[in-house]
Image 1: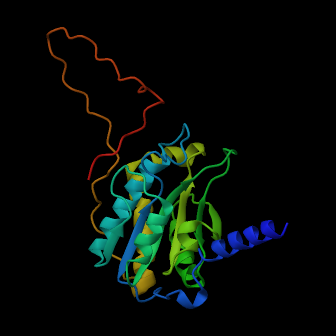
Image 2 (image 1 turned 180 degrees about the vertical axis):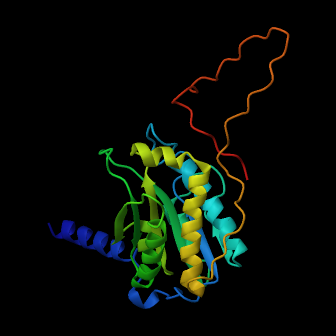
Image 3 (image 1 turned 135 degrees about the horizontal axis):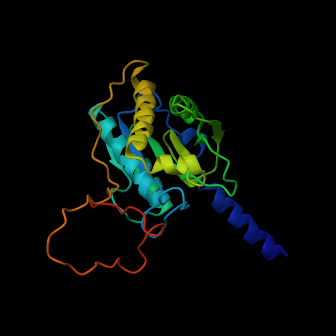
Length: 256
């Protein structure tokens, strides 16, 4: 029993070390010059994938790329945790955010629920220095037509729990919901999402009215191929590769 108690104590202490002590937290919420943009999931980790929307890893990268473009145009240094369909461990994402000086961290996700009627935006944070940023992002997202405000909450997600700088995690709607899942497929809607998040970040740093939206960035979600003119000669039908077909193969990621 004594040995078991020592082991449990050691595990508890090891877990405590994963959270930065309050004196190590850095308040860059109004002084940051860099933004670490984190596209959730990737590679073998698809994230949420429901019939109404594409895999979460696809749309998170698209929104994150659009967001990065807008922030660079607003004169911020931007570091992306991934720029392609690759798997990045959570601790590696934490290392990237904590090694980027004078920064904030914004992780892009989409939500999922067994109840298809659930919809709306949510924003999470852990450090008290990130609370204002989380509120501002949530406020801007909820200014979209028809938006449902599911609130700002504290959370123990690893990328916000282990962050030294202000860090937030944004849930950009529910892929499990019919309407929000279909909206997530729309490039124009993803542009709106990125624009609202960018506006909140710029205003967090420079004040209300400081944001000027740039021209949209190229999408990273591949578009449906355009129909080709029919030729006169008779051609053999082209069969889809195994595993692809209506409702099975989502839009793929283009390389960067």
